[in-house]
Length: 207
Ligand code: ADP
Ligand code: 5GP
Image 1 (tube, rainbow, N blue to C red):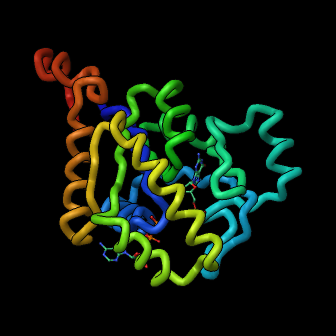
Image 2: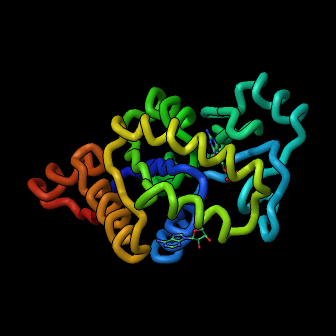
């Protein structure tokens, strides 16, 4: 008997350190499935098509959207982003835990379709550090940075409905908190539906 997979939904204002934290979580737990989003934005330096995102033209994105290929989609910073439905359904069916790196609009849509998902919002320690990190990352031009900072405030105003808030000040402490939320999620009775029965009946089990 194996527990059910967790959908771990992680949102954060751009530049907070979400990609860094997710990378670390996937490094420690290599069996994690990752939902590779589709986007119409241009690839950044170092990004690989099919690994970081599936990069699509706007026309192709709209075609797939019309065919209901996305579990959710949103327009962020002028670009379209969407979570392909079929791979997510397959991974969860196979009992894999799946990470979703999506914005607050998308997370709300996922909440409607996957209410048992675990929702984590990662916050920057303050707005100055967020700006510094965006600049240090060196991947966005000045107009993009202004746009991301303005949007950060709007997104953070919606953090209240998430299951957990993780402040990414010191990376190690933020990672420990994210890891704890994930591990606690794996222990929920809803993800271990036959555990008690198996123990009572002396059947084999594994958490
Ligand atoms: P996001 O995915 O949220 O846009 P990134 O993971 O790309 O953010 O991180 C943005 C920048 O901030 C990167 O240069 C990263 O190395 C740096 N960073 C991430 N976490 C921390 C931290 N706790 N302290 C200092 N810098 C950090
Ligand atoms: P970036 O362009 O910096 O990679 O991502 C910009 C924002 O889009 C981030 O907040 C990220 O979480 C969000 N995002 C990435 N993929 C998806 C997706 O599939 N759906 C939604 N709704 N947001 C996404």
